[in-house]
Image 1: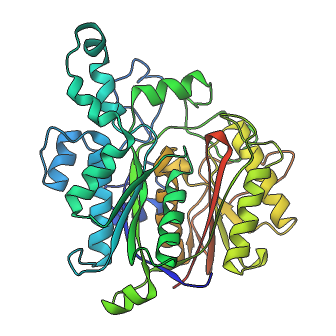
Image 2 (image 1 turned 90 degrees about the horizontal axis):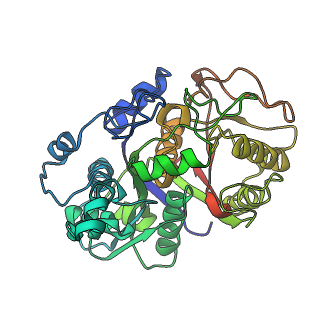
Length: 397
């Protein structure tokens, strides 16, 4: 890419920790955050495991020092993660540089509006909570909390949402529209989300097993995850420190099915190839792939096929980290961007938990133990409903 884009800040709250440091500790100790349901009010709470953030809404309010009743769980998670990313980067949002916030979400404040649905319909009460139903509501609340005013927008492309937020931020910086951007995504668990995925029959009642022949489905999770990206000029102007670079990205759509990926991995193959082309890297220069790897029969088959399409017999070391956090939907690519940067910083691959048997058709075996490995370039994949496929490449600074 003509202009380098630098990552200067990381922020994340998820099932494996309330901040990046806690997440790194749990990743390094192969400790999953998926477990018993504590906060989501569902009649299925004793049947399934979820990747819940280990804080109540009141505790989340304490974390960000804001007890506004208007803030729903999605907004609270987003604020916590975005604030950490900004603090980690050391940027001053009042220094005159043009700063954007590009957040992503799939169900926004559904966690709140669904609580009052019955009374809204029967009695017309609590209509004010419908404001939280808009996907842009959580973005606006994050922007207001941080004080971002130059550019604020929301992206919702299912499970590739945060990856597309990263791409838009990079494009705007490259075209001189912004100096830096806070990019990522957030989703909280809701009954709507849970029931929807349960209806699709792609939830595993036990711990998910990405890329295993006997995989049964995914575990849902919730998270907020953001990175701060900057132009080289902006970084130098404030004498900031680069943690990594965004060197390639691409989005493709195979338009195969509303909720399934192409069995030939067409969209994923195209996204990976075009991200590599932008980066100027060859397939052999990718040291690690953080796979989308949801643990569903369809996704893991399709992604395996795409990986073989691109890398042939020389597939790099890979793993899915969703068995740590659960599938966090719009936040997933943000979570995995943070994890990818941690891999680059520490030359460490975090394992694919719960794996025992390779998928027969491909025979691919992910990394199953915490592994020290020289890592210069990471490919991170995120593939969403509707065939929206996105790939990002992160490189050492």
